[in-house]
Image 1 (tube, rainbow, N blue to C red):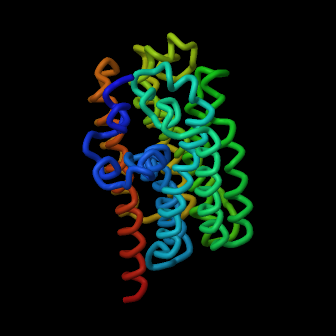
Image 2: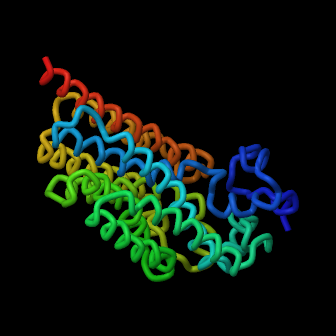
Length: 317
């Protein structure tokens, strides 16, 4: 057993994170199971929700994104990302035990049993449901529908070389929910925006997957990192260009203003930096570039929100 397992930390979490330092020992394995020690995951799940909330605010003439919705999306992203990670670790427990980066996780390390993990997942799911029922009926049904994608995702790496597409569907669902929470329906803009988010997720998760491609190859799992290998940069550029094109179409359909497109330009520059900086043979760099997508999220959200605020101010005066 590795040292990371002996001292009850996990190898793929940042050393000295708040969970390792402050979580009570009895709760620490569950916090690690839900990846509370790695907030980047819930940020990436949340961004399509927040972006869509800002986009629909501009489309409906609101002065800013609904703060209550933003708070609910944050809470929902944290708990549902935790539930999804727990489900992933339950289904992948035998695989995780064979991979250096993941064998110290709570289930393969023997610190949480499968029944305990299932109970914890159900608890997180119920919290997520409590969040979801704060919205309109259409959004509740739409949110529940996303569970089908979440359930099947862990098995896709066993069946296809493109499991990131299914992850993209799951992590982009907020682009639909963020819009419908305000309007109670879907239109062209959120549907196109959703597809753009899928390409974005496929891109950044391909970068992330390069950390495990050697282990994945030995075990016989699929990933876009393995599928494209040395051609990852062209593939990544294609994904990100598709994202930008679809976002432009969605912005136009939603009636977004100039400042939103300025934010989109900044977002595009950040994605271009990821492609040019990437070295698929440097795992630490891949992780750093992957995490930089939270910065990309802020850039786009600030642009959309500033555009809404400016247009509202102009209309007021």
